[in-house]
Image 1 (cartoon, helix red, strand yellow):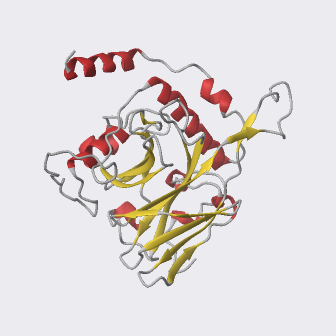
Image 2: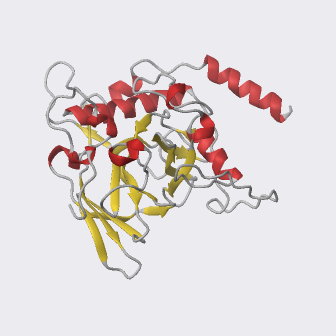
Length: 316
């Protein structure tokens, strides 16, 4: 069988594949708060979509250690986006599931950008085995979060998140503080065996951008966890393991076996200069310690908008 024949066969399987109704929803049954519900619903869609849509992620050379003999042709940078090697463009393509971004309901949104508009911005390995990773793919209009492995592809549908603040006007680096946080959220952890090879069920993520005077980003979460963010091209991403736990507050006939997500909270994001000195610290407040995505800034939402809907000052 030729490579083209194999590709056609896999595409035919993907076209016929259907998710098991309610499987992900039952696993992620319980959630509290408007933004938490949105984040959990996104993880539910991701789990169902991961069952239905196989994809292959090509690791970028230099991160995977591959030894391709082909020259690393850089895609030209546009609008402050990073240049990508051919392998990195393939990784971005796989994160986008070979198509346009999707809306919050999983619908194709080619009006938000086409596949060539997106670049691999930053990626962080997960664990030491299996090629798992989390990543951000960016365009001039917004970004897509990616979670997967080198064999199983992206566990997340390529949900589009628009830039907010000054970036919404085309200035990716035109923000006031040295560090700009763009998302605090949850993504699925699907690896080679249908679950994270590191044992994780979910990833708690924070991602954003930094200016040139920031050389290192440190992220602190609850439960005594501190992580070093991966920083590349002015973009950063950091994750900690999360999971579903029994919901002890559930009542009623559906309470048996009810699950809820572990209560992960972001405590701070700190930016350090090349000399090791702290240049910026962001501490989210209230509900925003749990979740923030740019959609929370949309007109018509109930309740106060998160602080991250605007560009923050030099120190927050």
